[in-house]
Length: 563
Length: 46
Image (spheres, rainbow over the protein chains, first blue to last red):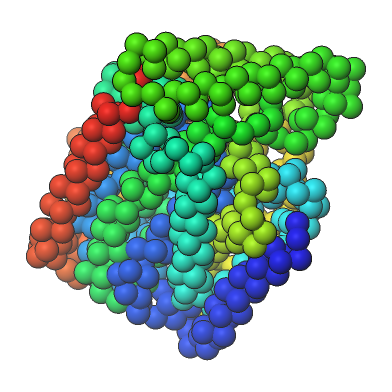
């Protein structure tokens, strides 16, 4: 990386962090620290909510997803606007009117303190692990492609976030997220323009989409009811609503963003902004991935985009075989490029159709070569992850973008990592301080609780770094975190839905229902683990939610019969 | 709404004051989906 890139990267990150610290250095109390003094405008909330959800992996993985599988992933977000409306209608007014600091505090007022504590602890376990992964995921990718030390990257991201989150609390998170989103949008838009510029002269956006379409990358909507297909219109609309409702409505890392709004209306408008912009934003990121695919129809691409994999196989007994595959790949790519140029020059005709079919078969042959390369990588080292989806976009950035823009794009990725991590440790510190410490040790001064909240934020930041550093010790930690999330998420959402919509469920019933349900969900997961039943872990969300409400209603029924 | 009465009716009243925004969200997302449908028809040749 050149000195200019280093300067751009360092300057952008330093400016965001210093600006965040200076603008928010005076905190008068816990309210100020936790809710940012409830002064945020709708667009600050909207950007903050979007920045919290969009982690570094969004910008690394999503273009790679489009590169391999096309635009269909955008359907995953179709349920989000519905969730935004429901949360604006029901969750926001209640949270605001009760002037709660955390989502779980509401549960005490609706049920009892035990339910509040229980759900807060569930959140801490799940989000504490996730915060570590938010740091680890981009670190592992950047360390592989840039050769940077993984430990130092984890420490750098973690420490930068800790500095301004501990110092300025929610307002610092909100303020820095505005700058980070500006960097992210600016960087992505410039990349989009550069990509169009890199394509051959005769290939504009229309021709690029046409090329992508012949390779199955423009199948945006799938209305089938195929359960084998992960992303369909229906799974996005129904499953996506469910997931977004639990994430934005009950996860403190998101709730805290809209609790900082200066009024109910401002918070609602912030969420509405997210509901309006999320789908086009994801579409745009996927479109960049599709354009990267088209770019590699005219330029050489490696067999596997992860340099660690290539290095491993080239230092193994399979190096010669891999070299042969690489040569075959180079030949194929040359043929694809020639045919693509011929294809663009033709108007609709039988010849054009014929050439399109030829390009298809060449691309299929290239896929076979890529699969063979993966087999060789696995044979060289069975521990390596052969799926290179997360490395496609970063490979393009580092090998194709001009000096200066590489630094800016790395700033985009690190900004995204920092914005999500900041919200997470801010929420973890707040929940520990407000729902556990302050609730169970009342009677201290405001200054004492402010100090405690800062300490808890710092501790959670350190825990996140430790989780990030120990992540390589586990085989598939990201999946583990998703599984742990699914084990708790459904249960928590069920408790909140019961609180909002089922008046006859009371504190005692929901508390015991949540405990029984949690044991049952863990049992179901263990049964799946030992192949006694077959239950993909994402279904634990739905089952957990329905089951906790069912058990609570059953317990209420028994109690009312006794009376 | 009081501290001990986190009920839904009051919450609904507050929200309903500007329900046009929700309709706008649904309509605009509907337009996005229609555009995606059009893109699929126009470009998807798989």
